[in-house]
Amino acid sequence: MPRLALVALVGSLLLGGIPTAASRQAAAPVYVLEIDGPLTQASAEYLDRGLSEAEQAGAVVVLQLDTPGGSIDVMNRMVQSIRASTVPVVVYVAPAGAIAGSAGTILVLAGHAAAMAPETAIGAASPVGGQGEDLGATESAKIRGIMKATARTLANWRGEAALELAQATIDEAAAASAQEALDAGMIDVIAADVQDLLRQLDGRTVAVAGEPLVLQLAQAQAQPLPPTLVERLLQALTNPNLVFLLLSLGLQALLIELSHPGGWVAGFIGVVALSLGAYGLGILPVNWIGLIFMAAALVLFVLDLKAPTHGALTAAGLGSFIVGALVLFNSPGTPSFQRVSVPLVVAMGALTAGLFAILLSLVVRAQRRPVVVGAPALVGRIGEVRQRVAPLGQVQVAGELWAAEIDAQEAPLEPGARVEVMGVDGLRLRIRPWDRKSG
Image (cartoon, rainbow, N blue to C red; front, side, top):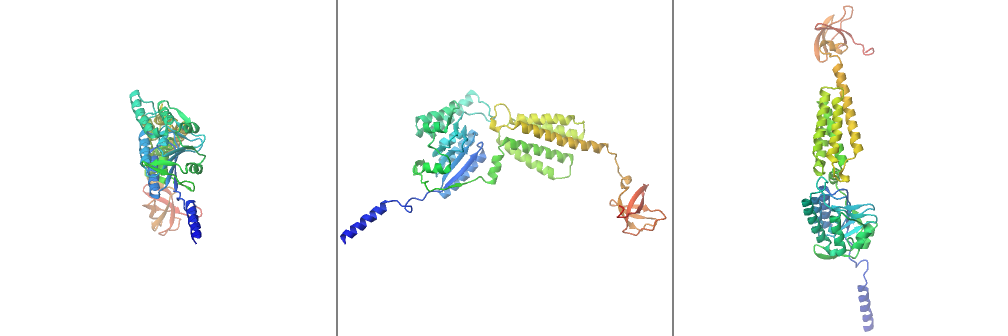
């Protein structure tokens, strides 16, 4: 019995020391957030919502990033959100061909872990102004100092090589490939996809809110956390081409409303499109002088409708419209990703000019048409007998009561009979019975 008890004790100790699938710590869920495009307030809102949901679920967050950068204010807000998170945030530059440029570089450094896909790049974090222009020496030095201090704080634990590369991206607009960033210690791994990323990070220790945390990701399944419809809309409104299209659509709809007043559909569409476009203008780095040219184009189009000049004002409006759009979005120094497509501007300008050429032709045709009002306009109209016509009586035509007469040879017409107006003699209509088949 003692020997059997000893064997049982040893066996239980051995089995207890071997980790089984049931005894392993359950893998935390993984939420994947994707930001593709410039960093905007909509991006920051999306990140905040994702972190909030992840904290409630105790999930690890993978922030998949492909961005040319964004404003300093948005960058600081997103960095603060990541560093204040109580769950691990892995910043992953992907897919192949993606970049983490400018402010995106600082976001990579802010992550509790950082990774890049093959054939991606990071860097070029030199600050520029709100219009994309180069800053003055004093302002540039101040912002560089702030960004370098932030980079030092975030990259200091990664080693001297990572710190030097981070500062070079700000001072010299340097950029690095995924392998160069890994060799410098700026990132932790190079991963082909999210599942490969989770496999490589499994078992690593990261510091979250000042406390070490071991990532249990071997059995984790990535769950996409896509933006909401509103977040997608707000992010889309940072696309200069879409903003320009909204402004153009709004301009055309308002001009249609002005040329044909009384309806509401065109006016409603115009107001909505211009409101959405105005939101985009409030986010994008634009030159507001361009709006003066576009407003002048609107005035010229309206003037040509009200006092046709055979298209001269429309042609001038077209030129003002195109110049205004290019000045608004494509001023010197604006980053390429925030510029509007020149062919799109020309095409929309031509479309707008074509629309107003059609409206102008309709206006001219209406002005040249003989004016027909009063009784002569009733010839050919169909009416109804109200008082027996034999041969004199009363009929209703175009909503009005008229004295009427028929030829003496015609049979009398009883109330309710349909008649056709053949002519007007003073204030009396000459009528005849209306035959539906012949009419």
